[in-house]
Image (cartoon, rainbow, N blue to C red):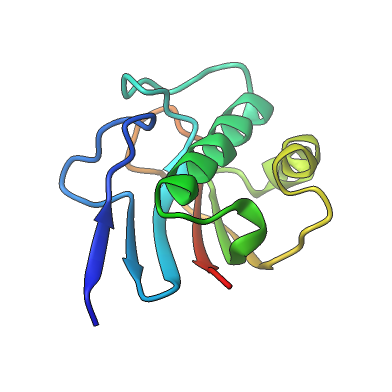
Length: 126
């Protein structure tokens, strides 16, 4: 089955990875963080970072022909798991009442200094 590598123009450039790979009607989205189009971490707390992470996720999905309600799985990676309690507003803004299967874990660090959360997703169109 052919694979399409997704590189949206409205998300920071991916270096050494693809933002997403579409195989058939399934889209595998790499971890998205609170990183602006220039590759800088947004500051302002977990709320600002998760909001931008979800916006980046949405931009990647749209470039692949999908939408947030096509997401079937989310994995959250937190530097501090206590931040999970503060993502609800951004979640509702981007997902509404759509609740994919989700996992949240705490890790020691993320690849980009200053990032507090990274979200990866799998979406299925149709």
